[in-house]
Amino acid sequence: MLDMPKTFVRLDNADNVVTAIRSLKPGDRVEGLEVRDDVPAGHKIATVAVSEGEPLIKYAQIIGYASQPIEAGHHVHVHNVAFRNTDHDYEFSTNVQNVDMVPESERATFMGFRRDNGKVGTRNFIAVLTSVNCSATAARMIAAAFGPEQMAKYPNVDGVAAFVHGTGCGLADSGDGFAALQRVLWGYARHPNFAGVVLVGLGCEVNQIDFLLEAYGLERSPVFQTMNIQDTGGLASTIAKGVEIVSGMLPHANEAVREPCPASELMVALQCGGSDAWSGVTANPALGYAADLLVRHGGTAVLAETPEIYGAEHLLTRRAINEKTGRKLVDLILWWEDYVARNKGSMDNNPSPGNKRGGLTTILEKSLGAAAKGGTTPLIGVYKYAEPVTAKGFVFMDSPGYDPASVTGQIASGCNVVTFTTGRGSAFGSKPAPTIKLSTNTTMYDRLKSDMDINAGTIVSDGTALEIVGEEIFNKILSVASGEQTLSESQGLGDYEFVPWQIGATM
Image (cartoon, rainbow, N blue to C red; front, side):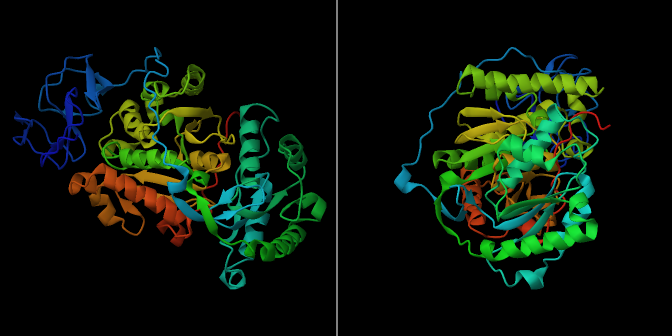
């Protein structure tokens, strides 16, 4: 239960900080204490004296350590809080809860596109995909040939979209980076939101198309075709050939029609960006409630952003269905600590300046709020970046916290809807899986209504029950999966958010 007087939120009785609902001035009262500093909305106030080196507690968890003595009533933020790496003494499978599954006859449905391989799409695009940056212009020009006038002939097709990126050459032909790019391209080539795919390369790149096809068992067909600029006769010839290929795919794509499909065919990406102090209080736990509902209906919820569960991963290992699954998550955490250290960074380089202005002080605090998107059901799988997700239920996929790269991996893993919580505001959108944007606070929602699909900020501003907002999110997922446009879609977002994670040296 949230203790929500007019001025602050206490999240747990064990906490030694509370969060200001509105800006506070010296002399204001919080829990019978006099506020000693100017405290912006969303920022923390100490409710007891905390000695230097002692932990600051929020969510009943450590979010940092006092870097100097902090008296009760004082502002708690970056000026007096220090970060430490997390403790690696993990518990496994100690908090695995049984899932109250909805009987199959009572499960929710949506109107989706059922593909020949049995997978179900929520959108019906044709993709022009690139193996390398060198073919990006060709891909964009092919897609640009199919504007509103041309697409009016094909009302069942959502569009022709180019998916271009800045890598594919100048990298090692083996190792983490190469494997991640190959998994992304394979995942998009097989994605159920595509009725057809054209894969365009240059010809001499490290990321050879033929190797991708052989390694991942992809076969050319009328709805999956490839070409490269060098063999096709140059840029102009490639564009003309690409337009011809797509033109041939469109009539077939237009034959696809939506039909009732069970919610178990939904794989939903759980994402956040531009977080603030309310993310872990409103939108993230409400999304977690929706994720639990999805799992109960047989679907799959995919949490990602490994650096943004750092400091909360111990809560997920306790929910792991077995120790092997939990240790896979721990191995990711250890890899990230090493990755950041060898690149002379810190796990606490995240939160961003905007996150800090919104009241988040350390990555530990941010992660505890971010992990709430994963709800409460067992963690049944841990996957590499862009690895195909084969399990049903709640799973984790490794990725950076950088939203475009993370969502690209989730879509490649099979996600056909994206949910995205934000407290500072975000202009993010994605293709081919649509993004539903969830505001964490009412002030930002009122300012950016044209970008936000749901306002979870009413949990604090209006006292709306978290469960009610969670059900609203779940129902919105079903509606969007059935074809309802999100606000990011209606504004044309998604053409520049395909960003495969680049790991390793560029040579």
